[in-house]
Length: 395
Image 1 (spheres, rainbow, N blue to C red):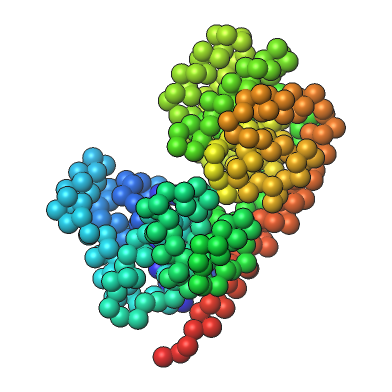
Image 2: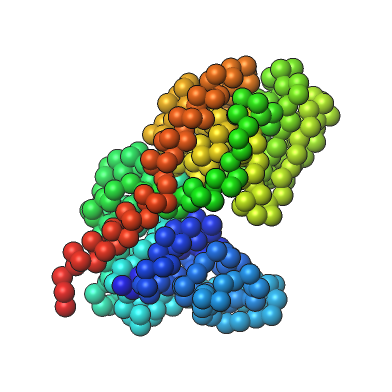
């Protein structure tokens, strides 16, 4: 089988998905849907097409990179900048050529706003028979962006032109159908594929979650993330956080600044976690009593699933699909992402009720094993591609 993915070659979600397929003996290709400099280091047995690329010593030897090699990262940026100015339509032209040359059995676009839009643009102008197209929906691709008229036109275009639609939650399938999905909706699967529970068993601590004294906050703040609201909520209940420390990961610059003010005002230490490796970050999840993830829009965040696996009690924004995994008030607490008072009340409950924390950890782990264990998910992914290929008329 030959599959061409249109996807972000720097993404851990994409590399995790590919890891489910790398041992199948299939021909796997990625056309990079963004001009990001880096390629994720976990890819194996795949060919990646980029416009320009610089040398990365951590890339597996089984990975082939096709494009123009340059010495320094800055030349990647400059090359893409010049190319986009001279030939603004270059990515469509090159992807069009690549499809005609590779003749993939399946094209799979992963995410809508870069990969999906690009694939749609190519399909509209493609002169030959277009391969069967799977379009994967990530977190906010439909839920948030459908409210923008320009995005809505493109979203509807994808849904009317893809042959198969893959989502991670029921909410997005319903929205896709409302917006004119013509293709077949596939069974729900985590956007990054299954999780390796052997890997997580090395990280998971035996310490009962109720004995933990770290509160972990996802540090994104911007177009969707609301980490500053989380900090405000922590400030509202700071008098009850004696003996606790706060750790913030993936922190935006304004969040880092606010954490310094937070510590001066409350005396509570805040550790800004630099991202060095996924395993190191997961170590914090395994030591956290509470994980707070706030966003005005999301699907099922990977960090929510990771907190469920590693026993950190989830306080998650109710604008995600978390309600499809979490029983509110029992296995986690769902909160409005911009209401610091409600979030503070959830934090107070989670630090005062040890029984809630321990029972939630046990329940969430069982749900996680059932819903996103790689041993269960990987065969489903392989079966999905195989059945799609076998359902196509033979030439």
